[in-house]
Length: 109
Image 1: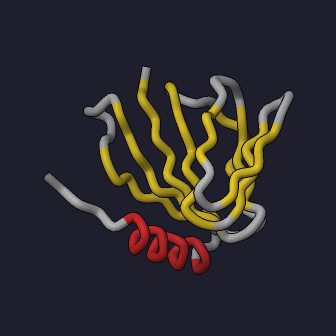
Image 2 (image 1 turned 45 degrees about the vertical axis):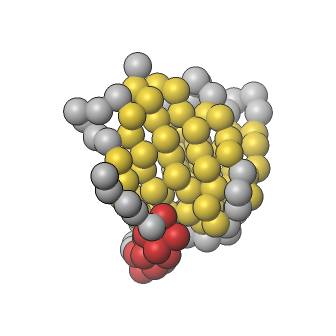
């Protein structure tokens, strides 16, 4: 068994994102190439956008802190601390409306 403090990790990754020229930082918490399930903690500085991309499988975004907007060609969803967004199986992007951290969970197809 392994235990991870998402609160402490979120704080650390957000500090890293704030000092990074890209304005982002990410850390895989569980999984990877050898697993079907992968959970990644992503921190974005306010104003940073993860450009259009496809989801590699079923995915959710759980907002740990801040406020993000997930957008597709036809719709957008704003997520605040504590919100869970089901990621649509189409091209989408994520924009940090303020300094934000979220847990991305993906079950690869």
